[in-house]
Length: 591
Image 1 (spheres, rainbow, N blue to C red):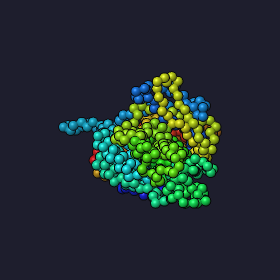
Image 2 (tube, rainbow, N blue to C red; image 1 turned 30 degrees about the vertical axis):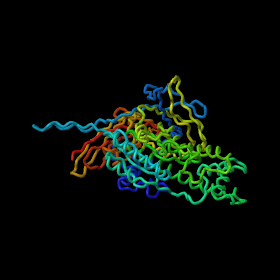
Image 3 (tube, helix red, strand yellow; image 1 turned 90 degrees about the vertical axis):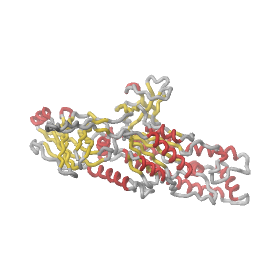
Image 4 (cartoon, helix red, strand yellow; image 1 turned 60 degrees about the vertical axis):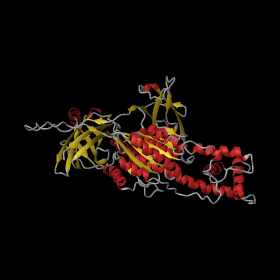
């Protein structure tokens, strides 16, 4: 989970526990031996290999979350797929996937074995109804780029928000871009408030106030656009250095010195911004392993990100696939007048009156671009950007709540080139008068062909860690448990598949097909506990296929746990057609 610039990322004991759970999720989702079936071994067998799917088009799937609001700012919840139009670089696309997500607690019915008739005098026990946490909210503080003032104001506002707005079923975690002292998701308000109280800035590189340096935006401008002598911004910088170092600097190579200074500052800025974004990416990966509604509140003073659009796009893509909404809060609050900003390293006064207008414009542009990546992530994932407002507590309240209704659209762009190019997207409504559509503005094409096997494995993991029911194949799932003692138990999960919709390939006198079964177990806080994957290969003669089409086929998985209440997630995928099914069941093993 660590990113290269934060070696202590997620190092608290609780966070390490969750990181270990994630590691286990990736390690245990590998093929396990399957108990032999009653069918002849030459017709139905298992093998311990990674599944290989054959749907190339799925690897180019682009996901777009859309939030539609009316003139009052209320979300619109009655739209259908045919109400939307989606364009990639101006070309209308075919929407291949459409779903509606509404806020609300998630209830999963229990699927426990029928209890034996109670003994006389013993009250009848009602099977439980499993209630997942209704939402997971991650407070992600950019302590690398945010100064003490912004961090103190935002953490205090977050503390007040939690005291008044945390509800039963909510899980909140506190995470930082430096990786220092994270607090894993919990409903223990005292732990969350303690984590907030310990937040302090952790700048990777401290700015040397004793020397005259260009600002990060000026450095970006000089390095990116390589202005010639006489450029207004370069003239401005020369005049400011003269004002800072004295009128008699008399440096004939001042232009080269400015460029060298800019290259150093720009490299440092890119490094810091990369740390912030990679930390956010790690958090998105972390949150993809919990069920329920998931949102991030990204808190920062802002940072320069103009050269990091591909990383921003990657984070958006991952968050969209995991149904994670990223919101952003500008910790600066209300912007001060750039021309009198006392926080600047160099004085804004100048011996050249014509510089004042240019300076104000540069500082205003720098202030606006500081939140560019934050705004893009919010726009892409269906979130909001809260900025230019001192009421940060109201910002947390507004951002922590998921939209009442959002729509997910997906399409597969034709002939997509793996050139890393940006593709502009536009989502419109067939009849959308008076409605406001919020959707991502674009995506970056992959820079090279992706590893299909790795991506397909990730699809299976996404299905296991999702809360959504998927109905690609007709399946039935039953569970049974055996309590061995007070600390050890076993859950048996039997998955029955109707083969009528499974794709078979004909080779000689055999009908070939492959099914992948993945079973995951989660505790009542949504943490991953255990899981297994099994690959079933079928080489059926016509007569056997006809018989299995009538009876279906069953696979049993045994999982070792401790007594408690668990959510069982069963996923089945047909390797050839790509159809996938996923259902959730609960088991309560008495102590």
